[in-house]
Amino acid sequence: MSKVLMLGALMLLAACATVPRGPALTLGEAGEAVTSTSQASLTGLSDDIALIAARQMVRTAIIKCVPGNCVPGKVTAQVEAGALDAQKLSDALMLRARALGKLHGAYAAFAEEARYDAPGDLQGAVQSLFTATNAAATAATAAGFFPAVPALAIAGPIVSGIAGQSAAKAQSARLKAGSVAIKAANARIADIMAAEQVRYAEIAEDVNNNLDNIVATLFENDMADPLPSIAAFEAPLGLKPPAKLPPDKARAAALTIANYRNWMAQKTAGDVYAANVAALAALREEHDNFEAGAPLQMSDVEHSLTVLAGWVSIARGVAPDD
Image: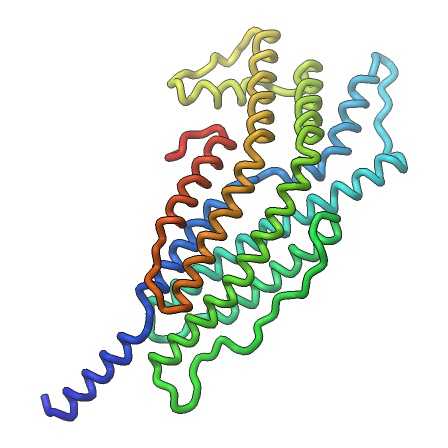
C-alpha cells in the first residue's frame, strides 16, 4: 500500500473515531428499553375512565329491571356533562400513550443512526415525536390538569451534511441534534405524566368503585361467565377448572379476583407513574452526558428500568419475567 493510501486510511479511521457511535447506540437502546416498558404500563386507564358513565348506566338499568318492566337507560344532561369531562381526560391519557410510542420510535431511529454511516430518518422520527408530544400536551391542558406550554419545534434541520464538512462530523452533528430534540420531548412527556399522576389520584377511587360495581352486577345477574377469570387465576398453579362450576362459588371467586385486580391497579398506579417519571429523568441525565462528550454512566437508567418493570408487573399481577 502506498504512503498516500495508508495516510488516507489513517485519516478515515481518525474521522470515524470522532463519531460517538458507541455511546449513542447505548443511549438509543436504553431509551428503547425504558419506553417499551413505559408503554406496557398504565394500560387500560383511558378506557376505564371513558366508560365510567356507560358502565354506570348499564348497571342502573340492570338493577332497576324487574320482570315485565325493563327500561333501557338514557343519557341525561348530567350524564352527558360527566361523560364529556371523562372523555377529555381519557383522550389526554390516550394521546400521552401515543407520545410515548413516538418517543420509543425516536430512540430507535437514534440508535439506528449510530449503527451506520448513512443517515437514517432521525429527522422524521423526531418530527413525529414532537407532533405527538404537542398533541398530548394540548389534550392534557384541555382536560384541566396541565398548563399551556409552548409547542416543541425543531429549531433547524437535523442536517445530513454541510458543505465542506466530513461525513464523521456530519454524523456527530446529527446525533447531537437528535439527542437534544429527543431529550426535550422526553422532558415534556415526563412533565405530562407527573401532572397526570396527580389528576388520576383524585379519581382513582371512583374509577375502581365503578369497575367493582359493574363487575359485581354482571356476575350477580348471571350476565358474565366466571370461568375465564378462574381459569386464568388457576393457570399459574398448574390447574384447570372444570367446564361446569358451582354457580354461587364461581361467581364469588371471579368477583374476588376482579376486585383484587382492580384494587391492585389503583394502589400501584401512583408508583407506576413515579417510576416512569424517574426512568425518563435518568435517560435525560445520560443525554446530558452524551451531549457534553462525557462517559455514560447508565447505572441510574438500569436501576430505574428495573424498578419500573417491577411495578408494571405488580400492577398487571404477573411475575417480573413473564
